Image (cartoon, rainbow, N blue to C red; front, side, top):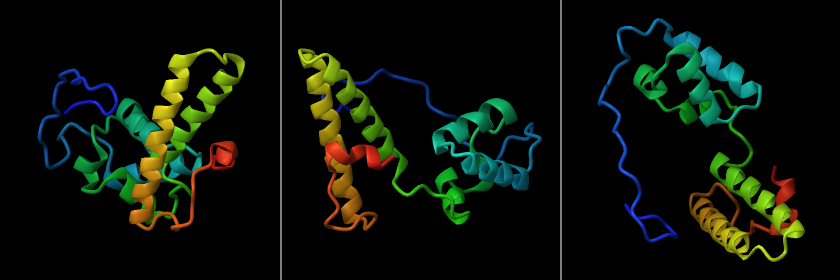
Length: 150
């Protein structure tokens, strides 16, 4: 699949082996995984960080393979989902960081273009979330007040 803004193809990478159940060498049980997910989420970690910690420290190759449902579904069942979707907050953080950089480096045109691309991604994502009723229809992304989102 081509990249969104670069018009180039991505690098080839390995694919994950197909499995529909947990590997037999894994020692941690399902209740322990759910408890660990809840504990890590209460600490304020994102889903990506939780998955990385489970993989690196506890040997859980994939939460979906073991529990049969996604990590985001588990977080939703525990009522620990963040106020705003994580992908949107990550993009807003990136845009805020770039905005701060551009205040100091006004002539950095490459970064200015990057900021335009990031903010267009944010607007598209907001449009998608409005269709899915995650945000109200009148909600609008404003770069000046984006820090309040986080």
